[in-house]
Length: 199
Image (cartoon, rainbow, N blue to C red; front, side, top):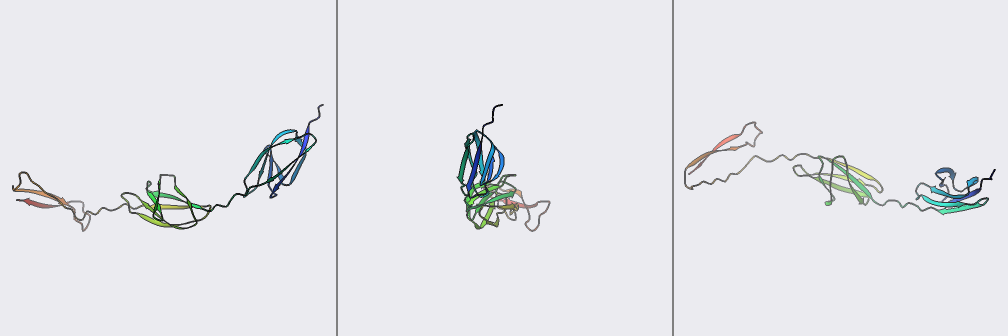
């Protein structure tokens, strides 16, 4: 029977305590020596640790030899900005933050994300034709998304007064007509009629 060619792998990292995956199989944490059962040839090695970027590499194991791997892990930088996620009912509202329009509008079912904001308190405004502007405040934290939701109110049109320009052809003739106006004191289910005379 042909003897299986095996080698040993010794893994360390800075900082220590990184999880070791060899060919996607977990072998513990660094520092660690994996011996007696690693077949000779190329293998995929991955080191992972919370707060650090994963380190992936290929290593070659030699028969009856120790292959040593030492890796310095790169720390993931802490985020310095945050974001605001805006929704509105109805959708398609334009959003401004601290008076600055960021070139987007809300859409149904998907928040409008405004990112790259330094931590702090912001004034958020939603505008939509036919609806009253809405303003609220939001606190942005580094590395976090702050949800903001607007429920917009329809604008009530002002129909208490109106003007009418009347011309006639030929001019100077006597004409009479009726115009319709809606009283402004209270909403009524019927219009009010006013006579207009042209002489």
